[in-house]
Length: 198
Image 1 (cartoon, rainbow, N blue to C red):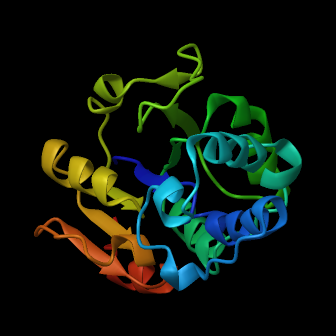
Image 2 (cartoon, rainbow, N blue to C red; image 1 turned 180 degrees about the vertical axis):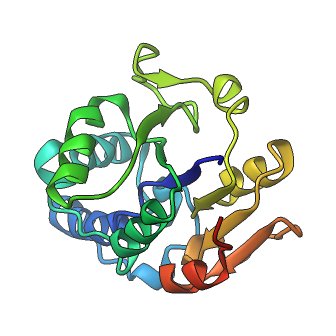
């Protein structure tokens, strides 16, 4: 049985809600969640290069990551899948500096999973290639289902890797052109109801 791919930020972890608080605290800017129109937060938050670098650094600090809340229903659904015999692979494009904090967050919330993989999804700076695998390496992996919020990754998974994708509805992916292999969902419970048992 192939594993289930689960993205971390804004799929399992309610990350961007915390980012909005960082933006307000660090720069005095107020942006509503529903107004985040681009996956590129530098664009959505209207930050300069230096502001974005500072923001991204703050957003990946362990104490910030540990305050993220889980998305409603996520942990329960993953528990149901593991009871059915599925393996859960958590795959993230976070900075590799957040590796330990990410594992600590998963432990704190008792998230059921079998593998944790960092992937250089977005060609970001300061990625440790001893921790994160490349997109080329990642593309050789197999999954029975992928859960994503990034349009770019959803398209890569569905087209290049031929994996059905559950696209978690977010403001930044609502204008995406979805292909037949991508289905939009507003909750984890709906995915559980749709996903076939082994």
